Length: 89
Image 1 (cartoon, one colour):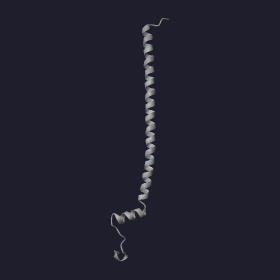
Image 2: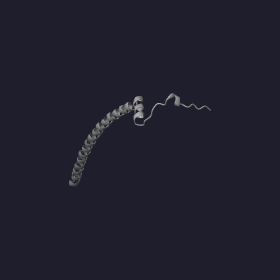
Image 3: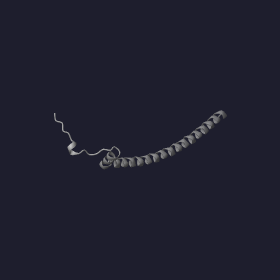
Image 4: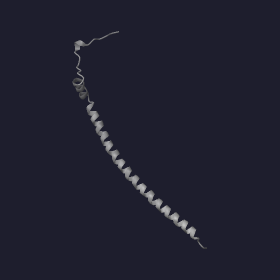
């Protein structure tokens, strides 16, 4: 059986094209993996920041903090007992 030169050329071309395709796909895979790891680190950083913000919010919304803000920024005071008016139906 004799192999034609065109068949050999086509097979050689197919091997070269598939080899270049494999190299390209592996390169893309590595680049995407690096990007995925970077996004994972960013997610972890944002999770830490979210926890810190929740802790800060919990601290700022304690009863004493709210009362102090009401007194200083809004000028609110506790009413005197004789200023209460009780309305009955």
